[in-house]
Length: 125
Image (cartoon, rainbow, N blue to C red; front, side):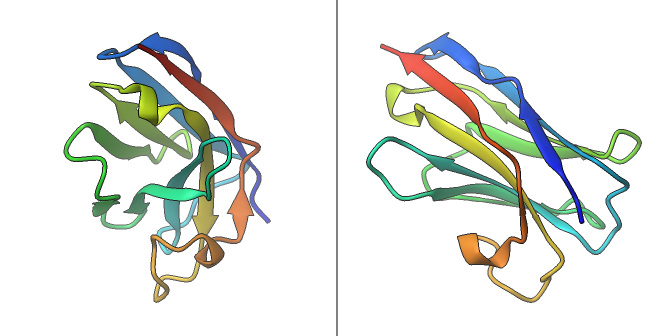
């Protein structure tokens, strides 16, 4: 069992940057995949990014287009999402997730077994 706690959300102007953190309650072993999803009001949860803990190979949703970077800190058992050039349409609750299902599609919500409570990101125009 892994508990995930996100932090770092807030209000930012369009064009600004924000960094989200997701701290795990215990050591993240190399066979984990960590992901970020987001959900805007009235919309389905959407894949943002994922990273293989062992290799730090990263994957991104199509809309990211080089604006976001996912990374990890082994010592802190933490995964980060650095967001730049933020747009109003990036406004959503951002969720951290973890899975051991390394063979399953990383962009699919049902692949992930553990979820954080979410952190609100609001981008004003």
